[in-house]
Length: 172
Image 1 (cartoon, rainbow, N blue to C red):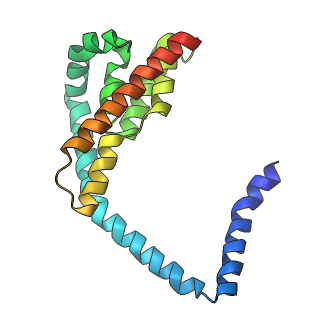
Image 2: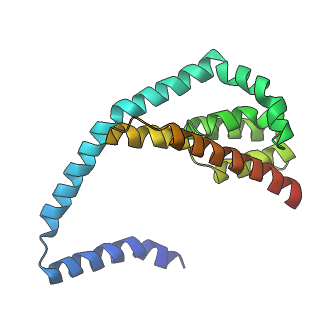
């Protein structure tokens, strides 16, 4: 089975190359054009990424995330999210790295087989860094009116986090 996994990417690249040669496509120039476009995209989204990472770091370092998490814990408890996971809910839409660090911290403190550890693990896999993704894409595309997209993304994240807690409660 491992040899199939090891051979898949090289075989896929060979098939694409052979098909391109069959169609008469200059593979190297198309590759260079794609690499140039990819580099330009990376340069365009870099300021947004740096800004988001700075904001997340400042929020975590200042203790604002923990303060807001403590304030919102009773509301999260109403929808079934443990108070210990409140900071994870707040970091989830903004930072994948912050979400992973918070989830790891919860699992280390409470154990991966505890209710809180299981909820954190499911939350890590059940949601996307939606605000981060929106900011990067909208920054690249120059979109300014994101009011409804942000509301929809936050509702989807809340649904994912609530469903995570509910499924862990039902299945474990």
